[in-house]
Length: 87
Image 1 (cartoon, rainbow, N blue to C red):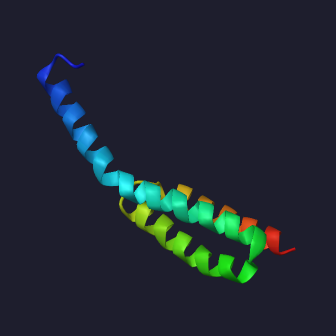
Image 2 (image 1 turned 60 degrees about the vertical axis):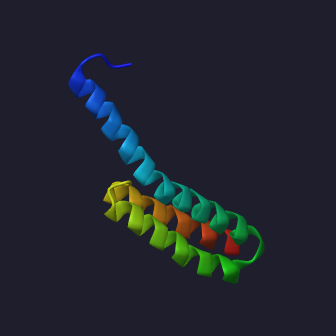
Image 3 (image 1 turned 120 degrees about the horizontal axis):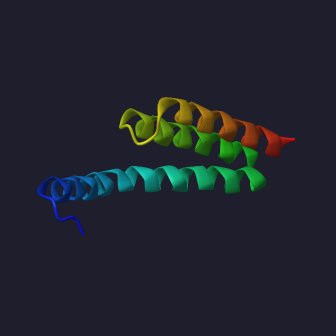
């Protein structure tokens, strides 16, 4: 536990920010997982899920939960994974 007053405040701020970011990170993880599992069975449904995953990634990037380059990389890899499952 922090002893210094500024460290205590920093801890409170970190907890608050973590709580605010958690729903976006959870939604992001769930949608990406759903796309990858759907891609193995139904390709057309995976395409629809892919747009939902893109939206979740874009929102996370906009809210500074993900860096913009990380978001772009994840979208690219996700699209590649869906296309690879098609073949």
